[in-house]
Image 1 (cartoon, one colour):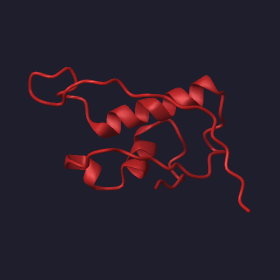
Image 2 (spheres, helix red, strand yellow):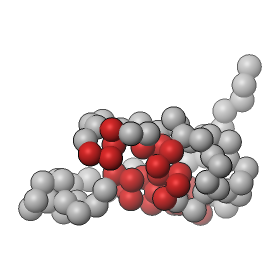
Image 3 (tube, helix red, strand yellow):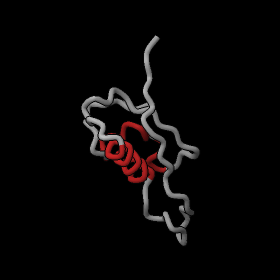
Length: 85
């Protein structure tokens, strides 16, 4: 059996994405990259030692329609060779 390690859980800010909402100009990729960086920094992880990122989101609109996990890895401080699912 493959071993899995979960280092931490981080919640993104909550708010409205509509034009008068607090998160109107913040993309899902930007929020996700900030979360990945927070997990990496809070746990002193070596960004090259991470083998995969598995990511979930509730609604898929705009750039979330693609592979949010992979795009978030590319926007974060993790190694760009890490795949995302």
